[in-house]
Image (cartoon, rainbow over all chains, first blue to last red; front, side, top):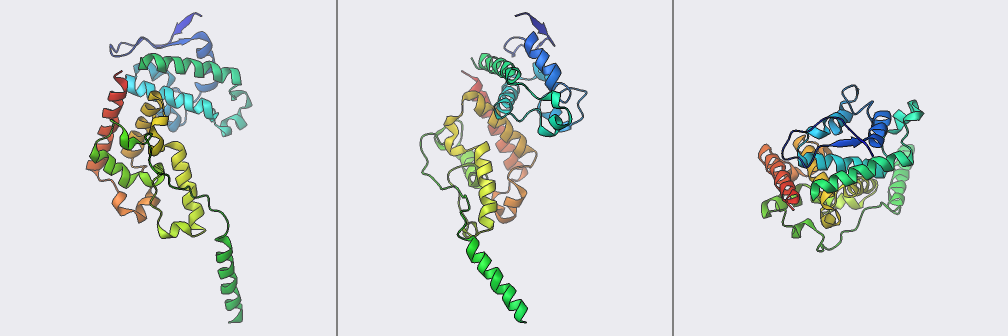
Length: 113
Length: 153
């Protein structure tokens, strides 16, 4: 699969640059980016995950953030219910959730090896 | 006067009756090899702090106060303790993967540093569990040190 680079990472400590594969980026853009980016309105959402900033995170914080993302996907708590009520199309489809989770797990594993 | 008596009697009956409704308080279990107490990640000082400030809701070693057995307080406490343990249970620490441990340590750091944990309602009755600035700093430092250890393969 062709990868589309979002931001390059220049931290030498960092295990490889963070690349969002096209399929992953598509889900992020459609289902997460509204709140978890600079254009988001909720500070809580921005404090938890900023997709554009993931490549800038130090290793420990990145692993923790990926773990948080995986946990949220496993629990099915994102996007939050009130958002889905307002925008039903924001709901994460099972296959979309799987795409994100598989990517996040592989990324976390590669950082821990 | 008679009305007051009837109301008091009714309240007493209700109070006694609700004692028979299961409260959902978790049972303490003996510590096994999964507990963080056996982990290389903690020092004796850190462990003492965790026991004092966290273990009541984040381990299988809760010190239940007398009022914890009385409904309706028991229901409220059960909710807090079960919720706390579902997020983090130091007695079952080794059930977490390396990734999950790093995630939990980051969360501990955030909660403690922001003064969100221990809960304010808990600290009202558990004054010894309060963390002063020095203790907060020590716990934050511990989460960072432990994470570094976990990251080094």
